[in-house]
Amino acid sequence: MAITLKKCGSENLKELQAIGIETFTDTFAAHNTPEDLQDYLEKAYDPEKLKAELATVGSTFWFLYDGQELAGYLKVNVDAALTEDMGPDSLEVERIYIRPAFKRRGHGKYLIDKAIEIARAQGKTTIWLGVWEHNLNALAFYAKMGFVRTGAHSFFMGDDEQTDFIMTKQLG
Image (cartoon, rainbow, N blue to C red; front, top):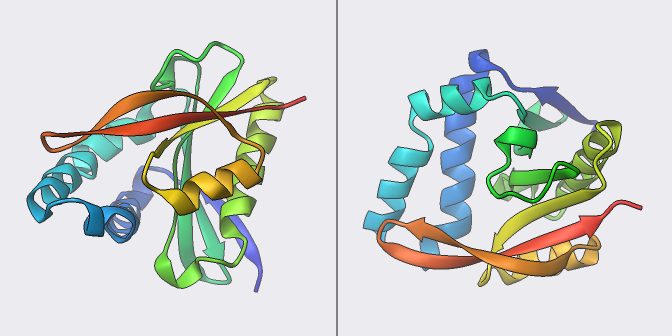
């Protein structure tokens, strides 16, 4: 099937909220308390918060379609939208999620390649992301894609402080 991307706008708010909740839950529910997960989902995917993110200059959401089906999404940030000060020459992959039924089909690589393409088009020389230290599949995937661990930062699920590794890739 054909893989296509569509830039998200405010008209896609309900779809973005639904896929965000679905994919985050699939990835992290087994590793967090139901209360912490629910608290996070209510805050992170609140419609007003998502509207603000969609309107943020320097942030862009993309839907990934496999044929006609929404398979995943990507959020990238540059400049003032970066969640960490990684310098003006960097692009952040803040979110990259694939729905369970579409995993292991090359979609993650497709989205990373798209993020690299966006970075290069904007003259960025570094691409980076945060990944939970216990998400071994993601850590292995990003290492395979040429990312290296360069730091860490805290991520909170409710009151539970967790560690995300910062992984970067230089774009020669």
